Image (cartoon, rainbow, N blue to C red; front, side, top):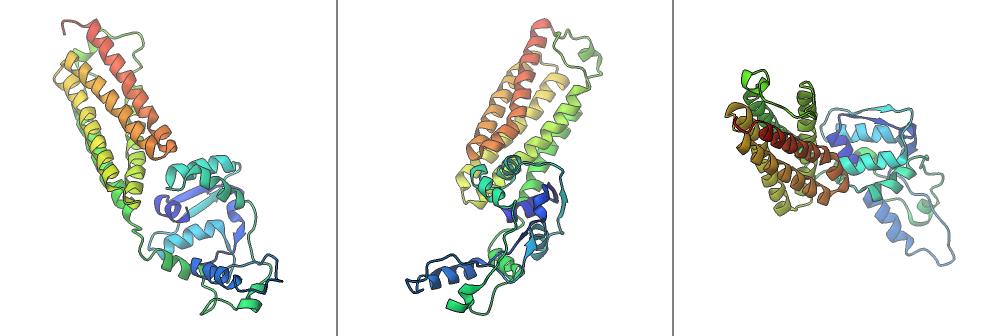
Length: 308
């Protein structure tokens, strides 16, 4: 959770409890204590505190991780109000950690988690070489991780979406005499709505699809990753093609058919994102809703202008 938040966000607006402290322990040190505890005398029946050599704020862990893997330090600001449930949903959207798992994890962040005694060291001894620092633990844990996967995926996906937006923008001419003289249904939105909506939706497509593709690659689910990439590519071709058919070629009926195909493709893309994580399906749902509306609108215009 920490790793993906640090890699994917330039910063965060988080609750006050991100300034609580934790004493993180390296997994190797935790295993040392667990294994050694199995050999304790049977008359010892109690809890023990284990932790790393020093305490650190939760927010600083994110920045420290970013620094250790060569990223820019992350800025974390405190939000006046953020519920654990909302924070867990955000984690489920941005990282591979599910909301169900993130909920208890984030619930624990509301309290300081520091070592109050080190009695176990007196009984079994500290880890070989001493307690591992957070910095060294991050270096070891991230040694085999591809910490640049997200950046590459976001760059490629954004480039494809941007190319689609450029083609559509160049083909679209709402000020042309042909378009202005078309009869339009009463539910046609004002002209300013379209560029605002499409800008937001293109950003949504790029970000959500990048999250899906990056996590599928991270999890080694290559077949699903390729299938999603192919579905996204087909959707973007249909997206750009509608503008060409409608505005540039002035083919209302073919544009109507393409708009229907785009709506179906968008719904399939939402299904694929939702199958990966429900939060990403919800995030991409406005795109499917908008393309469905666009198909209805295109069909209405075609019916109102049978000879055009």
